[in-house]
Amino acid sequence: MIPRTHVFAVAVEDYQDTTFQTVVYAEQDAQGFVQAWQELGVEDIDCVKLISAEATLVAIESNLRESLRKVGPEDRFVLFYKGHMPSLQEQGVIATFDTRCTDVLETSMPLSEMLNRLRKIECRQILLFLDGSHGAFPICSELKTDLDNKFPSEELQIFCKESPKRSVFVSCKPNEVSHPSGSLDHGIWTHCLIQSLKGAAKESMEKDFRMTTRTLQSYLAAEVPRLLRVTVAGAVKQSPVLYGSKVKETLIVDFADRLQKGQPSLAVTSNPIKDSSLIGEMRGRVRELRGYSKPKTSLSTHNDWERDFVEKAGAAEVTAQATEIFEKLREMFRYKRKDLSFTNVASTASIKGPDFDVNICLIQDPDDAERYLLSTEVRSFRNAEAIDDPRFLGIFSKYCKRVVFELAVNLELESKIDDIEEIECLAANLEYDPECTEFTLRMPEAGISIYATEMQLVFSLDGPGDLKLLLDNTQKAFSQLSGNRINLGLRD
Image (cartoon, rainbow, N blue to C red):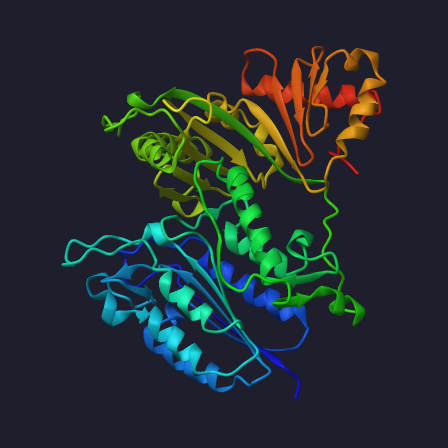
């Protein structure tokens, strides 16, 4: 009998109890996760997918029982959940569509119950992928005991220690939030997971194209924080977690085997630019933030407590700036309510519109513990003409001071430095480190400085100016480099 993979996916984006905050991109994440498994084609696939209103407590329990009955000794069972995952009275629960805020324990699926059901099946592998939006669960005054956003990890640790066949991937640590990205149209962690399953992330594999629990977790642990910095302007932390075996032998997908069978090759992007954005930053003293209250100790380091303190103190500033931009977009671009989505969690906010996305965040200044850094980023331009619109320039000139290009293919810095040094007028304004991990090129004629790493190019004005001048001078820099036959990876 051919081994089967049983995929059971549940995602709740909007809850029947409107007290619960929307879990942004939950439905899209579940769709992408299931589709990625279906496209693998390495073995027979049996999929169950329950989305939002379909994901009631009764429906999940019934479908889970039925799915587990089908699992054979040589099969694999894969479970994906995206939604709220709080704890109450020291019990972890999985919120369903019909979970009631005032009666959580009786209207949710206890984590322990789900794990006990999985303990009873005999199969070759169990993989759980839990993308819990811990930080967005509401605190209900009607409850005698408040809900705790810290999803308990002990149950998962015990579950995995009982058998090497079990592995549980969780999108973030218990005291963190799993973040969405308007530029990716997915939760960041699930986006990386889907890319891995599609074979589009070679960093998630061994050199022989085998993806294991260890290599996948290593990729998620590195890529999620990187994408968080890029798409949410680096304001928050999200640390993916793996419970269970991390050894090389715990195989998830053998892409080499897939290639040998003549199935589609690994995805390789042909677009040299992954994304482009406009970014600006404002710094100030933490004590001047609206939510500031004098701490017991002075801010002198960059530990977790101080970072959290600064972010909480600056939440009102983020909300105020995001609201101001949101209202200006509605007024000047005549966007309707359904055209814009607004997400505001702690010290981050994002606005997703039909033409572009806006991300705003506040963190402790990495260079000065007593100061904050408020970042604004405009990215994911779906309408190329929007950036030249006077209305756009009018809104974002006060916020954005740099143009940033994220490259899909690594830039060969040593060869580019060699090319630049052959041009006398450019070589005089070139600086780089001995290991050639980055370089800065000033272009006085264009009024622009370019900072380059393997995966990023940043264009900044040499002096004061507005956004239109920044865009115009960036184009001048392009023209000057092109005239000297220097390609920085921005075109094929």
